[in-house]
Length: 275
Image (tube, rainbow, N blue to C red; front, side, top):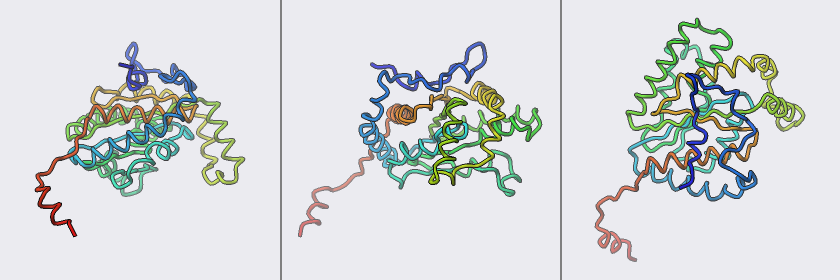
């Protein structure tokens, strides 16, 4: 049996620490020929659609996908090219921006709990509760002792969520400093992409090393067996989409959702349908 992509991309902690800097953002683990990624797209789309349909029909469990990554790492692109081919009836996408005044009046997990997927639903968090130990840590937006407590709160929260029949898949899209510059330059030069550009993105590049450290700490502290982190090298967009699709396929196959089989008097019902 071929090695699962999840095994290749699962964050590994060595000497008590995961180090994001040791992951090559241009690598393509599990894919010897990068051009194959495009050839596999239709097959992966069909497989994911079928598995999602079973999850929705079964209506007992949910799947939550947490997407994190630096600006331009491809969170929106992943949603478009991987999640976009699922049945929208059973998909819930939540982008988390800066907290609103109402959200600030509650604990940092309050707004997250409100957007957890119901049974049968595939939920996607575009950014998530991890912002409260990433950007908050980098920019000193909360005391360090408060941030330190949040890792344990996150772990307890995710364990509770998984105990309530929701599978959590956490994916960090990992790009290089140079690749981010290329993508920001592309946005700036393309009139159709300038609406995506913010000068703030350039300002944030000054904190690159701080973000790499913050991600490393968060993944080290919060990659648990019940909610592991996967780090996907994302310089190559086709590989990124291929890898994320494979992670989701492997996860859903492991969940093994089944179509329900209601008790129906099929002959009688077929007779009623006759002209």
